[in-house]
Amino acid sequence: MKNISLMVVFMMLVMQPVSAQQNSEGKDLDWKLGVQAYTFKNFTFSEALDKIKSIDLKFVEAYPGQKIGGGIEGTMHYDMDAQTRNKVKQLLDSKGIKLAAYGVVSGKNEEDWKKLFEFAREMQIKIINSEPAPEDLDMVNRLAK
Image (cartoon, rainbow, N blue to C red; front, side, top):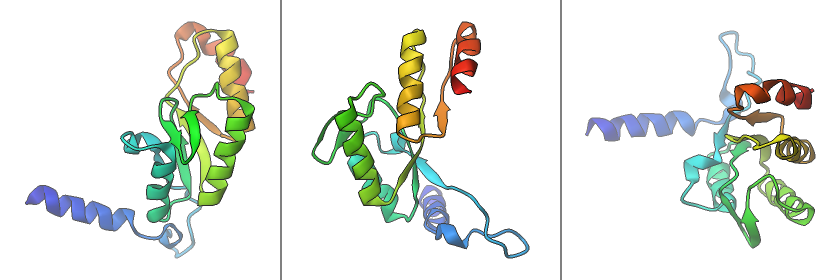
């Protein structure tokens, strides 16, 4: 029973409109609340967007292994072709959700890292969540600039 009560309280907090988030002076906070799509790993990315939209959030972090769905073949992997990227952008626009972050992901080599950063740039992703190997840190830092 305690778990159910905690879940109800959590859902009530999550379902509060984002615009209602204010600081102690009553000013709107510039928070960008979103969801990691992995939360909905048992669904397609398209279905995850529907769930995110249903709680009035506007931002998502995608991860590479999730099937896209919504009539789009493939997964959210950063090596998707340009046509698929455009379809994903259209899908996001149609739901009113911005792809704000991507991860957790790491490149296997410099070419792979470059593909990842190019994907992020093209998809207008501002945050890449990653766990680079220590020997890749200088390269990742260079690519991030």
